[in-house]
Length: 216
Ligand SMILES: N[C@@H](CCC(=O)N[C@@H](CS)C(=O)NCC(=O)O)C(=O)O
Image 1 (cartoon, protein in one colour):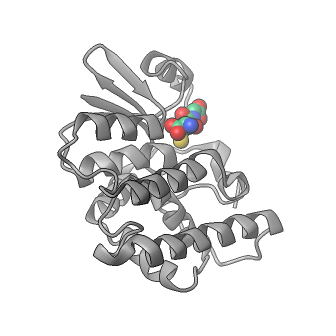
Image 2: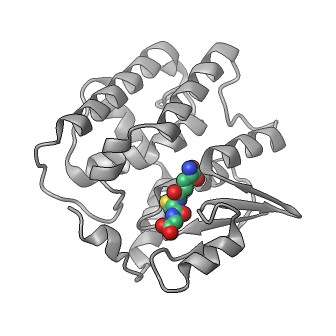
């Protein structure tokens, strides 16, 4: 298999399935397409039918979209606990993953993913604060209901944590401090060796993405 990613400094959607691959020790080549470069659009179109990354190539098959890739990996590697084993926990893990995938637009637009950077905390727009409050509430709820077996949302690391890892990074970048169990959860995600490895690789990148650098 090969996963096609955007730059590690900026591509939050790419980080999600990459973390799943790395955490569960699934062998996969990788290719990074730097975004916002003169050749990016053509390169992305060649790699992915949507013209967006991540995309996973498995033989003749292309799977695109972060959550679809995670589901494909869960189907293909059934011996590995990519989702929680308990059906109720798994259903909630899928719910919070889908909520991340389809929502939190204000947070994603106003606090862009910049894993290498940190800024002084600034007041949040009300719609961004509402997204932060909902995320912190759902982290606390998952930890309380399902988190007994480990430091992550459903105890051991699962796809749900991969979906929220870019939010953990954004909270650090913009000085957002979650309250309650959510604070310890965010620390556990940030401390993941795979996430730190991604950060190290992001630090080595020299591409600049002008579109994002004008913000924040
Ligand atoms: N819903 C998609 C979103 C993918 C997406 O928007 N990827 C961005 C990079 S993080 C992209 O490919 N952008 C193309 C561009 O900026 O030209 C997913 O979950 O994979």
